[in-house]
Amino acid sequence: MSSVTLKNLSKSFGTVKVLHDLNLDIEEGEFVALVGPSGCGKSTLLRIIAGLDNATSGDIWMNDKWVNDFSPRERNIAMVFQSYALYPHMTVEENIGFNLRISGLSKADIKSRVSEATDILDLGQLLDRKPSQLSGGQRQRVAMGRALVRNPDAFLFDEPLSNLDAKLRVQMREEIKRLHQKVRTTSIYVTHDQIEAMTLADRIIIMHAGRIQQMGTPTELYKNPANVFVAGFIGSPSMNFLHGQIQTNQGKAQVLLPSGATIDFIDRGNLPADGRVVVGIRPEHLEFATAENRDNVFEGKVDLIEPTGAQNHLKISVNDQTLTLVDTSLRELNIDDTIRIHIPVEKVHVFPHSE
Amino acid sequence: MRHLSKIGLHAVMLIGVLITIFPFVWVALMGTHTRGDIYSSPPPFYVGNNLLQNYAELLDIMPFWTVLFNSLYISVMGTIAAVLFCSMCAFGFYAYNFKGKNLIFGIMIASMMVPPVLMLIPSFLTLKYLGILDTHFALWFPGAASAFGIFLIRQYMGNSITRDLLDAAKVDGASDFRIYWSIVLPLIKPALATLAIVIFIGLWNNFLAPLIILSSPDKFVLTLALRSVQSIANSPWGAIMLGTFLSMVPLLLAFMFFSRQMMDGLTAGAVKG
Image (cartoon, rainbow over all chains, first blue to last red; front, side, top):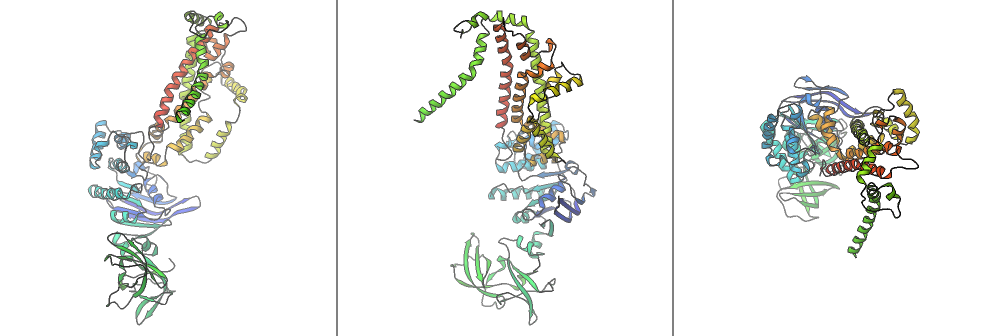
């Protein structure tokens, strides 16, 4: 196992800078997810850590060794690709054993190591098959087996589940998590799926436009997003945003919305000097107002109802703005019904507008 | 109606096959007749009884088996060399990024537009300067890095080998040569087989290059030897036809072997699916 440290890492393709001075510490045995939208540089970063691409500047340390000039093999990493990248002309057994064969291990050793890995992944029946004779999930497992068999210092995953259907994805996600709990190898997992990242990782790194936006545990990111981007990225359905201006009313911090309505919030500091802010409210934190609620109560009209089974997603139009509300009580509502909603003051996030 | 059109289609294809196969059958039949029978009217379209005499005469007029071996040697060596060098070069163009890559590739493609006949004298002078005139090496080696072959394989690699596959092999710890040998070569078999057929046939049928390069009769290849025994009068046609027919057999075998490889490769399965 190995720790991974990046110092001032940058990468440019020609004149286009895709990674900007990244600094990152990954502990030994940690499972870290790199999340961000397409083109944010997460796969590029993973390839640089793998040794498949070179950084333009900056340092990569693994286990306190400077590895910038090391090949993937010298870094002793294993990688699972989005396309699985199985060798089409080799059987499952040969695919998994290929790197051991290169290492010059004896046939008996290779066989025992391969069968160890295939037992873990339940691939024992498929050893003689070629990749073209396997289903998507099985190929995925073979790709995992290929990584697992060599006892690497770190696993790198590049969106390994995105070619699977939804059900299989959930199943494989569980398997990856179990596997990590078993082997406890440092893992770096790239995905654009926040649910995948949140369910799997000890720590999530959110990237946008080649910069790290925030690092933290899934709960930290959900509870205390550092900026509008992180707030909008984490959570599903995504956070409601309203633009407004800060004001103080009888000692209470408020945001004045363009419609004239106000939202009370708890001032946690870090507010912009010009007072222009974005208010963020998670759909699951919006609730139906009761008689006891006095502040942060708004009247709105139901625009759209999206039932998902355990909860309904309601689109509510409030003063020309549309808010999403997650209703777990499954209240019987019709389109155009007028309802009163309440925003708990402690759940209101306020971000500087410039972001 | 559908049945009828199918019969029609088969009939057309059958006629095509007959037209194609006719010269081969004709040559084979003429190899069993005497010169006199061949010139008789109507020509004898049946198996004659002069096969053994023709064979004896063939061995008499030329060292047939030596010449056949020469042809085989040049074709096999040239094919192996071309497949090896073209695939290596194509791998270089496909897998690596280096300065001037596109320019070099472009110049290489442009070189295919120069008519081969124009290169006859320069290549003769070059071979003479190198002191390898009248050697078999001079016949098979210069074609080893053919622009056509590199282009063909390079394009095939683009369709059959993903970047991820090369990266996966790198992560697995394979050296550059190992990637080429263990991963790339098995996956481009169909392209290699296609190139092998083209090169083999080209070398086997080559007449002009041996004509200007070879001068010793014991180094002659089939095309040259079969031509050299023809004259205006008294050409031993029966023997020549038999020799011609025998010279086609290795070509047929080579084609059968490579076309099988081609089919195997095409059905091996791709990365995704």
